[in-house]
Image (cartoon, rainbow over all chains, first blue to last red; front, side, top):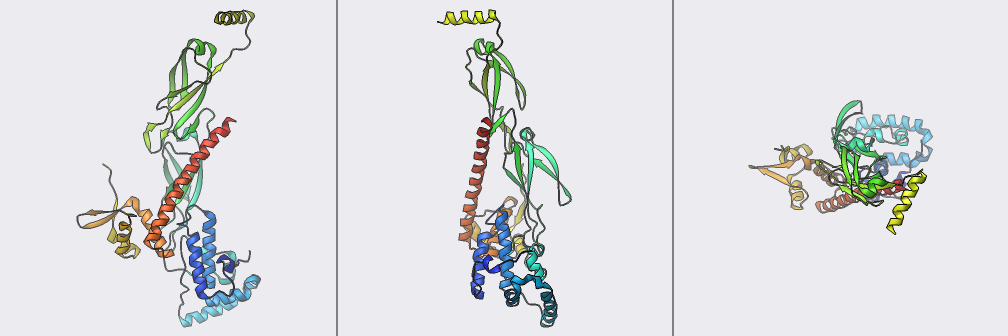
Length: 298
Length: 99
């Protein structure tokens, strides 16, 4: 358990007044609030630290304890005894409100070990706050996302049926509202953010909604023309190779690319690059015939 | 026909304990669109998430509507840039694979 420097968290000095603390807290909260820093775990952590610092330093009693024993947190037992007697006092005086705390999924269970050791669990706030957003990564193959598909995920022990729209891209995130952490004091639950990691396909390369593929053709088809059968993601297609096709020639197959995200009836294109395979292991007769061809070409 | 889910602005204000003027201000700044059916004003369900985010910014960070407008604009730009980075990364991945 590490000591947490609350003054450093709020970027203030030990002599800061209540007004300074409030101003510093507002500044830091604006900087690190989860709504201003979506999907930023570091900002969320910092925001919790800032909240915790404010809860301690804006309360004179807590601040006094912290200043007195903060670095020497191992004497937590002494604080505990003091805390119990203080609680008895508070019961006779009536509840005091620490006030001034922000939310953004900052529940009592999110206090640092250091805070819990010194002050026990944080006081429950009266305001309701949205729960924490959960982040998950789903790994799929390129061919998996060619068509929309349903998957069942287990989140917090509950099965969640999820439809993954065809055409989703690598790195894209979809949000499932209300399947994150529980809200505080009846606040709304956070969201589940699923990031898709889509593995490359050995046969097809994807750029946006277009696909790229290299196809080997024999010398005869390249020189004289011919028909080839090609595998696409939507099945086999017959393709006419023009006579005198050069190595590296690119042809476009319109609408044979990847489905456009959330527009399943529209597709990108498939670009096929021809790779002309030069025959090897020629017999003497074949070599002779090639020579004759080249001689005729001179 | 696509059915839209609508939430009345009155219900939203009561639930979140806010004044209607907040909704009105957001509409005036073009940050929110309401739908009027007969004499009742409604919010479209797909705007709810954005509205709740703006409410949190207003309530928890004491940011006024002008500030929310700026944040909203910057978050949109950030989102667009993130998408562009993702697309560029995917494109780069293609060329890295070719090596």
